Image 1 (cartoon, rainbow, N blue to C red):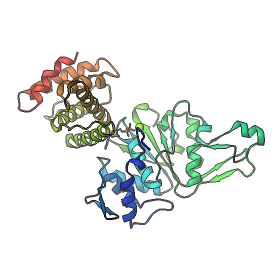
Image 2: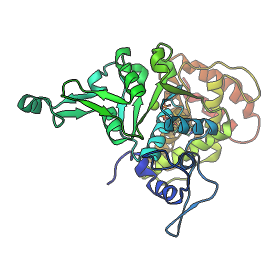
Image 3: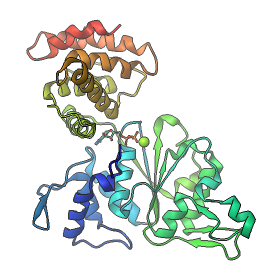
Length: 366
Ligand SMILES: Nc1ncnc2c1ncn2[C@@H]1O[C@H](COP(=O)(O)OP(=O)(O)O)[C@@H](O)[C@H]1O
Ligand SMILES: [Mg+2]
């Protein structure tokens, strides 16, 4: 079946199959892969793997702290949950999906945290027609993703957990420590978690609230902070790989432009960190200049050029699309971009390469 955004276990079905076929490592109970194979799925392998005589490349999907990935996998094999914390767009969601797909074979058993999340949504609710007809029975119980995770022994993803009210978050305390859920409406109503169950939660540092999370709940999680990318080459690699995927999925077959990707990566990284590669301090916009945002700027620019200009991409389209990404939170951020152009880009325009042409597109920043 074709879908707009296939889950990781579908997108990487072949890779997962090849990893399973070649996995000789010890597996925690109910895991589909060993911790070593889970790590290889996320970080890629140097050599392709054989699957029924075919050779399958295990692609690198996450760039950054490799040891953090190992720690996260090990945390999930233990009896605490995993909490991925970081700025928006640092691949917390992506990582939690990759981990769930590799360990449990599914990444869609998910609770989305919002201010309106209720205890029912976390535990279970009832099919009211059946409840009225037969009273409380297991058939009338509508399981939540957490319930399903415990029952099947798979991972439950909990997105943006700090957006939920505290009393709702605290439902997780007893579940994570005792691995049981009580169902007081049913006689002997109790659900014991099957091995393999665990929780991967994500939390956005900008949402506040991570610090206000109850310490009892904090103790039930291993915290891992994901830091934004700090190298232009790495940022460019991600932009390239992700843009290629997204454009392919949109059915647009075009060449990527390495030079433009490098300019985009440099601009985003410098505006994010407030430091130029020459070592000068610069102002940063209020908006998060995330890698995820850089990917969508590239994709948007490439699509615009493809549909309107019969070109693969141009610096003109890049600057036009960058504007929207920078100005989305505060219009004053436009001035930060303007200053970046009139100081940093102008200086580099004296050198060879595309920077001069980039500087000439400053006219779009207004
Ligand atoms: N370190 C990274 N490695 C690989 N891709 C990354 C990285 N950081 C950001 N990305 C890109 O950003 C996208 C968005 O990340 P997402 O998981 O939605 O972020 P978050 O949940 O942290 O807001 C990813 O799908 C990927 O394209
Ligand atoms: Mg997310």
